[in-house]
Image 1 (cartoon, rainbow, N blue to C red):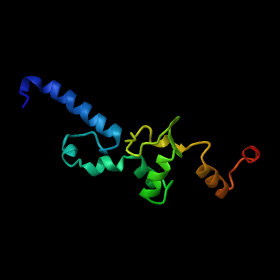
Image 2 (image 1 turned 180 degrees about the vertical axis):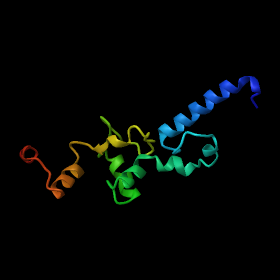
Image 3 (image 1 turned 135 degrees about the horizontal axis):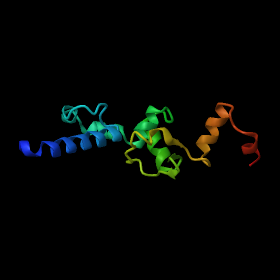
Length: 122
């Protein structure tokens, strides 16, 4: 219970918490702390890397997505990720891709007929 003397501190802490939760992708708006009441464990689970792979249609189901991550076929930014429990922030979500040497990436490029001739020679 913070008194009226600490209203500025309370406002700063609330803004920082909402900014952090929004950056993680757990809440959609940064307007009030009321959205924090409805925050559940399922929101954290939806931000895990395999769930985002299914959402981005890089895997058919969650089991395949976990297997792809554990085998090292997925990278987030420049880092190859092998931990399926990784929470992906909103800022890094656009940088989820296949590893360059991944056989899955080669199959996707072959299917879409986008594979480079230089890659065929290698």
